[in-house]
Image (cartoon, rainbow, N blue to C red; front, side, top):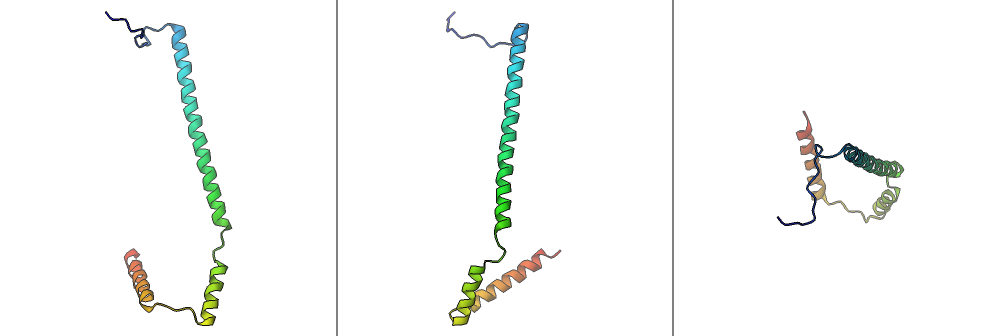
Length: 102
């Protein structure tokens, strides 16, 4: 027989009462730590979602700077409409609406 210094795995049947209690407490601590870790991760996710919602609420629906830029181009005659691109978008949206109707 070769001696390696390793102990055989402990089984509950062979463990003493104190050892079983210690193992049970260690298992409970591990389970509690896992639950707390999950709760902390959930809190971080919730906090991140709250920040995203707040950013969306604070973002204006209309970007006035872009609207003003387009107005200025229209007034000066610099704004050109690509008729083919416009027609393509109108047809694409029309087809999409037809497909989405029940």
